[in-house]
Image 1 (cartoon, helix red, strand yellow):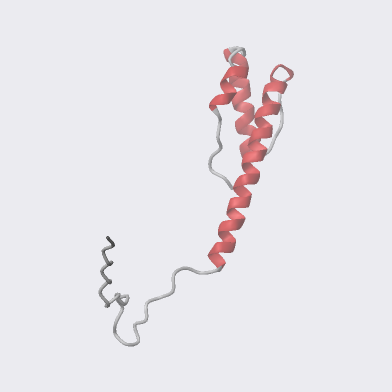
Image 2 (cartoon, helix red, strand yellow; image 1 turned 180 degrees about the horizontal axis):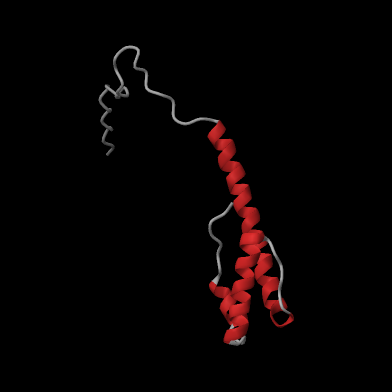
Length: 105
């Protein structure tokens, strides 16, 4: 279960015409939807809730896709363990000195 959700600043313009009472109802409805999945929305905030709900669904789908991708990547394993059989856990260094470039005239 997700512990958070995003509210975008782009929501401000369409929502700034709502009264403080309507904003409070909307805020409670958003939390109720995200936490419990309940869509009990009053008629005066239905339109505002609808476009926010749509964005919440899109974000949730992106989150689930990211979780699935991380799960698949986790199954692949991490970096291989160092070879401690010979007592050397350090990586091998490049021992050859680099060649000098020839000057062209």
